[in-house]
Length: 437
Image (cartoon, rainbow, N blue to C red; front, side, top):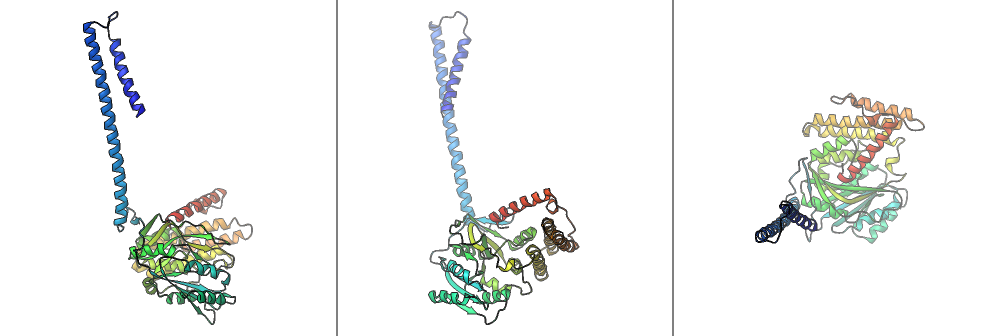
């Protein structure tokens, strides 16, 4: 405002200066006609000042109107996002504000915990479940003939809390069979399969079931899982920034283009009707059986994600099943290929443009095989042999119809290729952390 006032004063002063400059040389001011001229000058100056004040007022009113319009627009947008969640954006994705569970409603959630020799982690894992608020809990610990103190720990927990049941195997059946049996023991409307070394974050079940309750067509809800070693983190983000809903087929395509499993598992809640209809995990797959299951579930309905909050804690340790292979990256790649192949054999005909989608999936896997081969070549020992195995997998995938070989910088065994892969890894992680894919 001060600058505008100064500008108006300068304009008036300039008008006076120009009027004086136009007077004849030697003219004497103060005569009758001069006084009339000076009066006219003062009137003109007053007119300029009045016009400047009017202009300022109009500018202020216009600025206030624009600000009000922006605020109303933001409020209307937020209201529409909350009131009309089924409206997808231009990408076919629904993004909306979160809704709390209706007052007085506590969804029943069954958390099934298969356990094999995880006595040292079981107390923390079950404790993170029993601390959940806003849901009606049913907890099942299924011990697969552990040789450590897992049964004793589970019995102590079940004695303390009537919401916990313990089921024991007389002999070890394996992790996939045990997980499927545990899923079959669920009684709640929603189901969580939690490994005995992982944890839930405070409030995660209420956040996930709120989305699934508000969006009945969603069969699965997940979020961000934080990895950790040693002591579980005590302070994790629990504030929800929004919900994202994908149509199942769209989510499948996005995940297959990425070429990796985007879900770790402690962050997932599944509708029990979908668990029953899908039949759970496929025993033919010993690795990546969960990846195959997520894809199959997505053919049955929409996929939801709780954005912003950390929904699960994924423990990384040397005794985990995923680290039992000689070459983790090669085993994981081969398992993903098997999971995707079985998915298309079983569900492909039900998908729109399934031939094209299958080619997209195999292309992503082949590209990742080349990329992993270039990284394996940098190993100080056995790098050449490992790279050859990745190349063999890539060649097999590239023979499929519609795939072919596509050379990229990420598959280059050069210094530039290494730096590019590192940058690509960081960007991929950030996208996955924020958007879930």
